[in-house]
Every structure is written in C-alpha cells, then in structure tokens.
Image 1 (cartoon, rainbow, N blue to C red):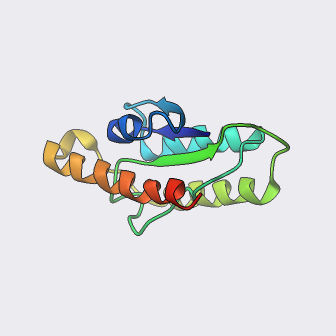
Image 2 (spheres, rainbow, N blue to C red):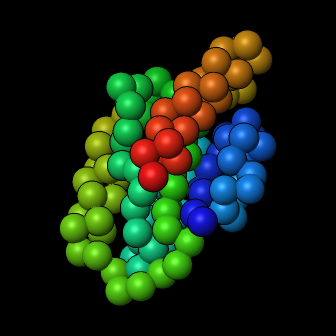
Length: 123
C-alpha cells in the first residue's frame, strides 16, 4: 500500500484503493511537494520522483507524489531530492488554475494520472 499526496481530484478517485490518498484540491504544485517532503523527512520513502514527467512546474497545476505507507528512518538522498525539486520549482511562476479552461484542467489531471500510473504498474 501507498501514501498518495495530491492536489489532483482525478488522481484521488483513480488511485483510491491503492493506499491512503491525501487530497487537497486547493494546494498548488509547490504545496504538494512541501507536504510530500515533510513526509519523506519523517521516513516515508519516495516511489516516484517529485519532478517526474516532461512537464515543468510552470506548465501544470497538478502534482501527485507516491510514498511508502510505512515510515522508517529518513533517507538522506531522498531528502536532498526534495530539496532540489523545491529549488527548481521556486524558479518558476506557478500556473493559475482560475485562469485555465475546465477542459485544459482535465487534460492536466489526466496527464498527471497517466504518469503516476507507471508507479503502480512497475511494482
């Protein structure tokens, strides 16, 4: 089982049953990374890279991070991965969902889901 941190309502529906889904639709891309980073700092393990896929932080408003359900000892390398991911994210102006058409938002939700699906099919 997994711990799934997301701001994507489609991902929350699609991945229900694969672990605990922590959905906050109001979160930004960066907010999701911060919430996931905090869980990695207390020992949850990364199952996908926080900057997976070819979309940069300024191109998509949605992010889903999959972590191990159980926490152990924090992994220094994974903590550094998150630190670097936040540094990269902070270089960009994040997209404003309120200015995007609903059909575009649905497309970005689907892209996020499709990329994360690989985590579950690889295990």
